[in-house]
Amino acid sequence: MKKWILLFVVLCAARFEVQAQGGRGFWHQEWEIQNGDSIPLVHILPVYVFSRPVDLRRYRRLVEAVKRVYPIAKIARAKMASMEEELCRLPSKKEQKAYIKQVYHEIKEEYTPIAKRMTRTEGRVLLKLIDRETEYTAYEVLKEFRGGFVAGFWQGISRIFGQDLKSQYDKEGEDRMIEQIIIYYEAGLIR
Image (cartoon, rainbow, N blue to C red; front, top):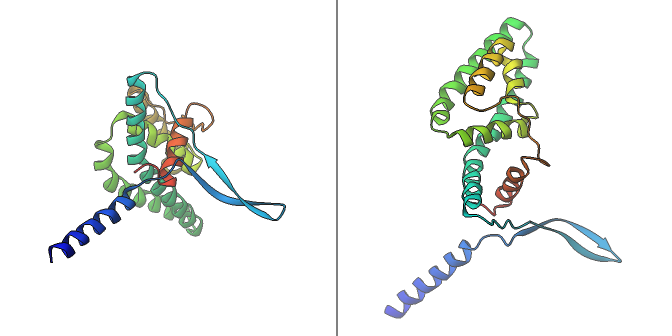
């Protein structure tokens, strides 16, 4: 009986060990046919090497921020798309304003506790990711749905705290590390 229990434990442990192994630093999505042979197109991901421990800590903090706020940005994209669809269906400006106000209060009630617990870095990353997902800056979203005065007010408040609602997402420039982290996250290489 002890042998069977030991065998069961060893097999279970081996099974969990295999499941715990992560990605290998590459993925392939497409195949290319050359001379009748199928060849996978493999995308090799770069490996970051940091010369200073401070840079490594900043990178890890950025990874944690992206992991925390990326799902929120995806939800924002979905909500904005559904809002735009619904606004197209509503015939009058009065009904559209009432609908925007209702959605605003729902979002405020649901996400205020989450936003209060965010760090400044997470807030900055969220603004960038909202721009990445919706292709509108946070300022443009506010201006479209809540009006220019409200957007200007919140832009002023954000500038006091060192943020900018008008900042755009630049995946080739200053936000390339965020873009790389998102690629890793979507590929399952970051948990």
